[in-house]
Image (cartoon, rainbow, N blue to C red; front, side, top):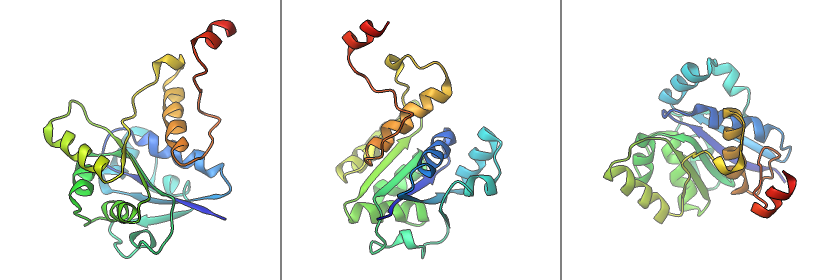
Length: 195
């Protein structure tokens, strides 16, 4: 049975996380990705990755316009495993936390929450002020997972790409998708023995 996962890319820095998630999920034959990109998200993809819209959209199985509130992912009757917003801007976080579902990104998240599906938000902002923190608390109370893409320095990763892949692997774990990109911690003793 095909598992569907909605991937959204919004206007925070870190569009590489959404792109790497799409690339990783392309390697999973039983996963169908549904991509939604906000206008600011596409701007960041272009600036940060020098990637055109067609190149980004080719990574997904299905692409929806952020303006298309009538898209399949806007309905609870359209079954998905849930949604990953990578990166998640503070604007998108605020819309999701307050239920202002006036874009497909916010509506798809709202639907996932009401259907009790997994919603993971890779929030990207620093420093944070009180409204950011309150919105993260609200999303957590709704059942969402706030997942700032913080590097795992203990894994001794040797490049930015490896750090991104480590985060992507941890996010995929939340959807029971095994990733060869993830360097798992086996304990300090094991690490010392292999050195």
